[in-house]
Length: 183
Image 1 (cartoon, rainbow, N blue to C red):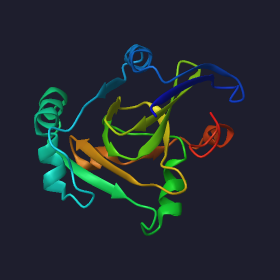
Image 2: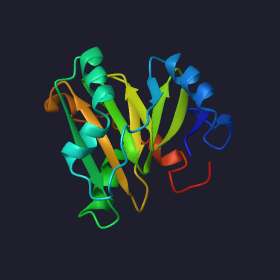
Image 3: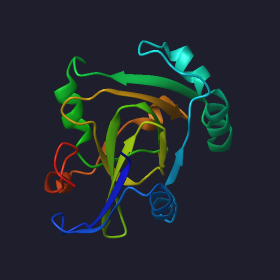
Image 4: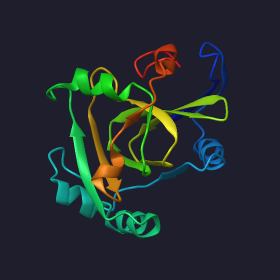
């Protein structure tokens, strides 16, 4: 289930807001310049659908996002429980970082949590199937795919190089509940 939990960035033990109401989530995130949308596939997808099949199922929305955001490419990422090096990949993105371009993800299946640090608060956004999130470039954030990921996501890029993480060196992510934790 899609959820938003907002914390003061110095008080991870006390949520200020916790909601699964999509309208509230969209309003809260949009106020920060973060795009949040929900889409439905135009056709059902097989569990082993190819990248081309996934992109075709969401074709009009993918093309709209590319056009509106100036993204030159979209691809599909799959991370499963048997994915090689999943622990190392999870650990890497659990560190706070920024990018020089927007981080745009649409969740075809599975879930992941984006933690956005803005205006003295941490916004934990658990994205699930049918969620699109666009984290503006320069936003301090981290991502948790959970200990047993099963994610299929469409990623949008201006240039692959722009998506390189630039780590802040702050250990703030260690203080907040992970995707497998409560709240």
